[in-house]
Image (cartoon, rainbow, N blue to C red; front, side, top):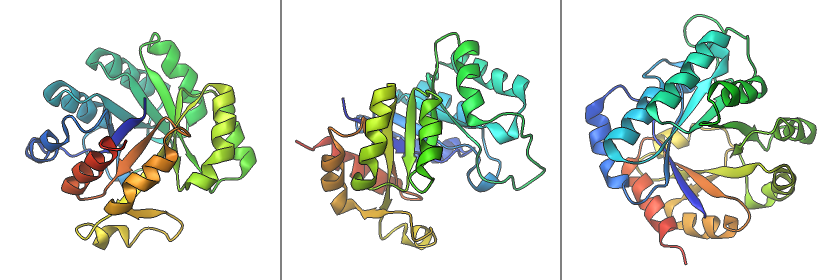
Length: 239
């Protein structure tokens, strides 16, 4: 199954979610919720993912910034995920915090085994991998044996060797597709030049090229949820 995952910001506003999420029903297999983008605190992603899953029926994936928590807090968040029915977590360091400092007790690799043991097998754990990292760093992260990886800054060409290694280790692969629209260009234009950006019209062709190579895609359409629904609809209609 080629899974369609859509990224939704961790807002504290129920009114915003009521506007954003209903149009995504039937288009997404999962909602992916980052944790404190740019290090700015909002609602915790575990809570937002669980709220969306319970109210709107779209399974949630929650990110957890390991740089913000110690061992007890991380295990508590895993316990909250189990209680609330969240079955996929992404462990990452995250951007530098906008307030206070980092805990620095855990690495994403540490978090994989901890989440599996404390989650009693009910939670799958993923990590982020950037194709801009050195091949040895990418291999080391894959060899930490996450259940899945979300890939940053990739193209279909840059994914091929990474996917081959991931497949040999039993790791599922989901690249981000950053979609630029007329409504969000004010934001996407500020992204680094190395981040591949796609028009909505090009998304089906890119996704079609990826189908059969990876397990699905993470659609990131910053600040444009109408665009997210449109991109997901186009991918869903692929032959």
